Length: 153
Length: 153
DNA sequence: CGTGAAATCTATTCATA
DNA sequence: TATGAATAGATTTCACG
Image: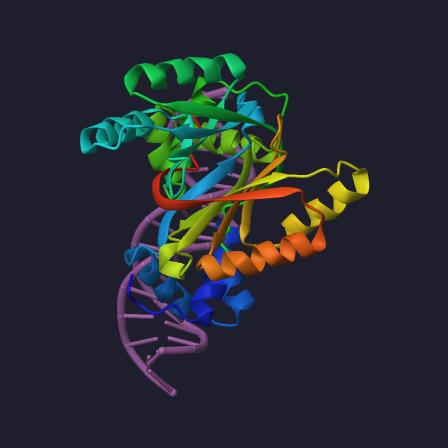
């Protein structure tokens, strides 16, 4: 991870982010290099963890996941074992796509994808029954204006 | 998109989400089918847009993107052309990874990935100079507790 | 270290059941 | 519609410049 990432690496990463199904020849041509060096670099970027995984982006609505909530959480508990349990709950629930610990008066933010409001309520009830939470605000997404996994390079 | 997605489709999608670099033979074996039917289904899922794209997940910190903010936005403007301009600004800025229009008193939430607080401020200044915004709250992530692109299937 | 050829493996097509 | 053979195409390795 401490390896230096140069301009060519970044071009390659950009191509992979945009379309990981491209062939090596295609990527090499676009970044102005050739097959072997591009291959060597991709292998290095995987080994060092810069590339974490190959995946596919799915359409949530096509899968019946019509509702997306951002959940703002305040808690009065900051003990290690409370944190441990909270973290475990989040990890075990596949509807939680993201969870961040925050600076400031809101302690955590979650991004939760579910079928509908009722499914969110089931998640919410399960969450507050498992860990003590002081205050929860749920923000309901009406429209996904932008959504990308491509990091700026 | 109106196509029915059955249990086998979901298994295949689960495997692709987890690791899109697996071979067809490997996926076929895991889901209890064989190469050709799996291939036909994947092709159909791509064509109908259930599978949106092939991509790679990168490590933000390895790329020097150490800061992640969730930005809560209130505006007094709800005109079509204001929205248009706001949307265009978000689309053109690669540091904005997600943007949602919300129900309730907060109008929008953004997820923004940048190098550091200074880079966030540059983004923020650019944003408020381009579109009229009534109120902005930035939530700074201290720790990414969970992050997945895998939708629950 | 880059190039291009060779070998290996995988995706894709297709004939058959 | 599934299977497995046949083809086409990609990845991976390697010898050479």
